[in-house]
Image 1 (cartoon, rainbow, N blue to C red):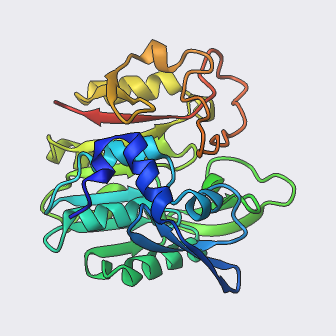
Image 2: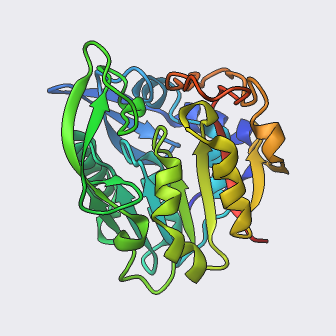
Length: 298
């Protein structure tokens, strides 16, 4: 069971996390952080996106953390697509308890290893499984993962490499394939740097079979060939579009609002602005800031 301060307010979550944060360098490019006042996380010391905030604030995306934490329940089965260091994986695993299950999908081998280590360090390894593949529309395809140096949060299978980027061949899976042995799926978080439309396509059996499914999806319209079509597809499945406000609350929104120029959260104290992929030339009028949506049928 997660502590109450993780579901009360953004201010409380940030205050308690900062009050209890601790950091120790372990060597070999790994930093140990106390996160959310509760979890011990190993993080890549070379990363300039997430690691500085885990080390010096003890949280990441506090408003998203709050929104997800408020909807987690004991016994849930959750999927963390684009798990990165495992921040949301730990939160999910703690909240769902011994009767729940969490599946983390992370194609970067170094980060997938950190997710496993972090789950075990916090005594949550018995309920966490890690799949070292990229989620997409089809399984068992070989794709190129582009990893900018020092920016693990922006690794993507959807953009060409820039100078200095690392390139790694990885296999794909689908959410449908990954959860095929589960009796149900309750909550999915998707943050995949432009691959969200493909991931949505590869989870349609899961969407149909789970009418109460809650999906938190990071939307970056400028990264998609057809952002309007993607959002219409989500709506056609019966899911409401709700925007995660910076206080962690949810607000009903529309396709037009989400695609308005520069729509998305302003940078806030203690939170780094999200790096947005290059704007696709053929996409005009699409918002260029990232934004977290909560999708559900209720």
